Image (cartoon, rainbow, N blue to C red; front, top):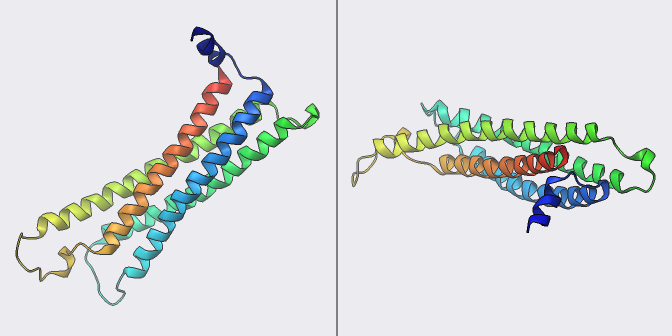
Length: 189
């Protein structure tokens, strides 16, 4: 057990790190792609479920949708960055050491991925908070057991789709951040 802990506390060999980076980047790519795809579909459904002719006095959902779109764009960059991790791993596994990126370049790439994930996580969290606040406000404004005659107090599918998109983005950015942070911690020890 102590030997296992000691092996984790030392910096990995280049080949071991490259193999781990390649595996983790593949997993990260697919998890983020699936969660981002679900978020994208939910935002598209939210946009298409809006009734253009009906004016609502609730600008918060529009802000939630805007933040969700920004979060999705950051997630698209993060998915691309996971592919870049994979390319770095392939370069590290080439037999010609002239083609290997240096440790500082790898650390810089991991830091950029971590920063993008943290910013995306923050944006998705703020968007979720805005959306949940609006849904809660609508739910509290509805009298129980009485027909609702005010359309601005009805919880619409749009609200739920925006919330679904934001929650999935939180998961995707969190997963990407954990991957980058774990690899960065392992490499910098």
